[in-house]
Image 1 (cartoon, rainbow, N blue to C red):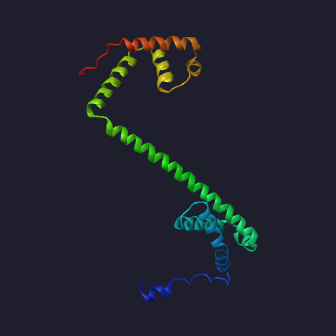
Image 2: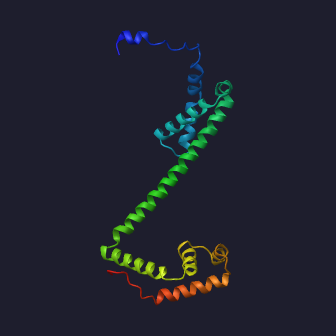
Length: 189
């Protein structure tokens, strides 16, 4: 862009005097107190500054922010509440991420310890069980799927399938016996 192009751009709207002064005053007046509050809540200096900045941004998005900023007590109270909520959200997010990271690491550790022979053995067992379950009657197969695989209580399985609780138990017993004595083999195994 040349100087000529820049000179042809429309002028930005005029800013009224004091438009940003209330923002600067509010930030300078309450920044230190909010930073101290965030630091007391366990954040390091950098995270505390980020949390305080997020709180100010949230405050400035409010339609009545300028009016609230006129009263120092009201503005610091609202900013403190916003900061607390931001901190709680950060903790929740961090907690969820930590739990997810631990689960992923545990899953990776479990996968790393299994040898290829163990994995093949488990796969063969699953294929065998799948073959045996597929040979069961449809109602018995549904009971097994809901009870054992979906971990539904037998009363709930009975309601879902429209059969009595006792009949669910009988079907599960028969299914277990059938699995114990199943001689199903897939082609090629």
